[in-house]
Amino acid sequence: MEGLLALLGLALLLALYRAPWLARARVELGGLPPGFPGQGGEGRAEVELLCPLPVFFRLESLPSAPLGLEPRSTSGVAWGRTRLALPLPHRYRRRGEHPVRLGLRLQGPLGLGERLLLLEAGKALVYPPLRPLPPYTPVPSFFLEGRPTPFGLPDPLEAKGLRPYRPGDSLRLLAKKASLRRGEPLVREVEKSLLGSLFLHLDTQALHPSYLDHATSLAAWLLLEAERRGERYGLSAGEVLPLGRGKAHLERALALLARLAPTPSPALPPPAPPGSTYFLVSQGVEEAFLQAALRGATRARQGVLLLLPEGYFLYPGEKGRPVFGTPPGLARALALRGLLLAHGLELRVVRGHQAPTL
Image (cartoon, rainbow, N blue to C red; front, side, top):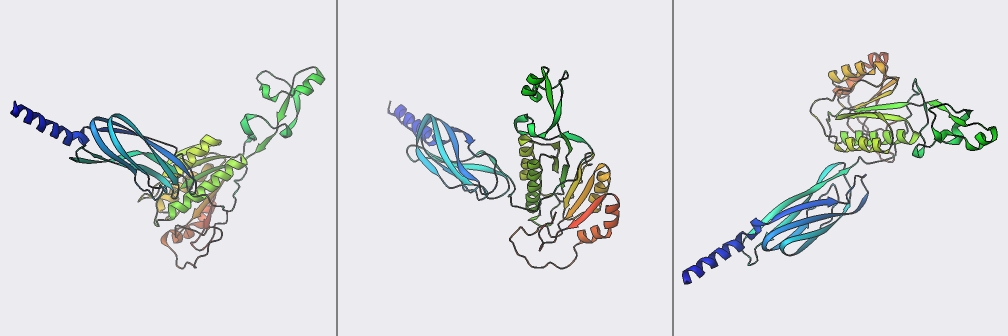
C-alpha cells in the first residue's frame, strides 16, 4: 500500500512538473489598423489558455520599435479555459508590415517546470510617411469621362443642361422640378471632361537603404493627390494594380507601398495603360530597366523617368550638403537622355541635396 501511494505521489509530481507543457494557447489581435507613421491608439491582444492542470502564467507584450509598442504585462493562475486580455498602446513609426509578438511564461504550481512561449498575435501595416511635396498633375487623357462625386450622386452644379428621359438613364439624374414644370421626365446631362490618369512604377533595386522609404513616400503623396483630384491611378510596386480610384483602391495601393521590399535586381516596368501618364522612379536605371521603360512608354500620353542617384532627396525644410560625382546610373541615363525623350520619356534627376520639383 505504501509503495502504491509513493508511486501515486511520484506520478502527481511528474504531472505537476509537466503541467506547463500540457497547456495550449491561442491568440487574436485587434485594434491595430493600417495607418501612417505618427498615428497611434490602443490595440488589444486576447489570449485563450487551455490548461488541464493549474499553472502560473505571465503574459507580456514584446517591444517593437517600428510600431512604438509600449510594454504591458499581466500574470496570475490559469486552470481549465482562461481568457486573457492585454492592451497594446502603440504609435506607428516605420513603414512596413511588422509582427506583434507576445511572451508567455508558464510555471508549474509547485515551482517545478517552466516553459516560455513566443506567440505571434498578427501583423500591423504601416504606410509610408506622408510629407508634403510639390504637386504633380498628369496630362489630360484622350477619353472623356464624368467627374467623380461623393456617394455616386452627380453634382447639379456640374450639369450642362437638361434633356428628355431615355430608357436606361439613371433615376439619380432625374430633374424633378423641371419635369413637373414641363410635364415630362427630364434628366440632367452631366458634364464630361478630360481627366488625366497616372500609372506609377517603382524600381525596387535599392543601392541605398533610404531609397525605398523616399520612393514610397513620394509615391504615396502622388497617389493621394490623384485621388483628391478624382483622377484614375495605377501602381506597379512588386504587384501591378490597374487604373482605378476610390477609397478601397487607394488602400490597396498604400498596402503595396507599405509591403514593398528591396530586390537585388531591377524591377522591370510593365507597359503603360493607353493614354496615361507613365511615371517611373528608379535609382540604378540598369540597361534592362531602360529597355523595358522604352517599350512600356509606347502607349503612354506622357512619360517621366525620375532618377534618384543617391537614393534620397530633401523634404521641404531639410538642408543637406552638395553631392559631387556622377554615379553609374546617372551617367547611363544622361547618355540616353535624347533616346528617352524621342520615345516620350522625360528624364528628371533629383540629387541627394535637392528637393523634388515635379
